[in-house]
Length: 238
Image 1: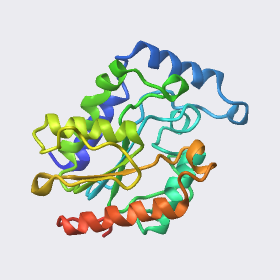
Image 2: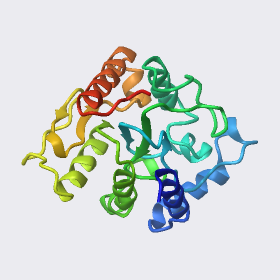
Image 3: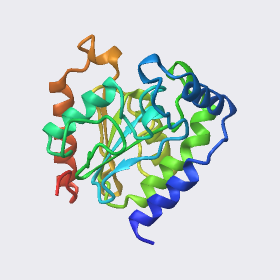
């Protein structure tokens, strides 16, 4: 089975998932109640699949879809200010064909990058429970299996960083004990078994509006991810 087919089958399984009653109720409530600015638009209101280049050397992992962002548009980091910040940086890095990210059909294409999340349904207050995180884990694990060219995982925020390391350790990778603590720019080198893991602050409004994460900081993180991928025999760009 080729990568595209495997990803499509995974997406078909994912969008039907109803394992977490609290998340199902919330994502569907938001899709009906809507935000006033989007009252005339249809909401996705389902688990959100990953998005990007099937030949990616860099995997970007966020926390979860935003209620009125990806939960509305059906594409990771699309339709909110976090996505605007992230895709603008990907465009500057030559990893996206455009900075604009408004809808699934907006023409956006990624080059050498695939974007996903630790949890696939929008959680209330952006805080999934440990059980909900664990229920969603298999989808991220499967993506790591399918995307065989990934050499670097860029984890956006401590939640994604910890989950990625947890999965890699359980899959036999040499993750140190105790696991490294998350910080912006934190690198975890897993040697030839890889992939390398790189931490970055999440491009949430809380971080970008306060200057905790600046465009230059995210540019540096992406540049480092590209360099690590190239050093490991992959590439963040074609």
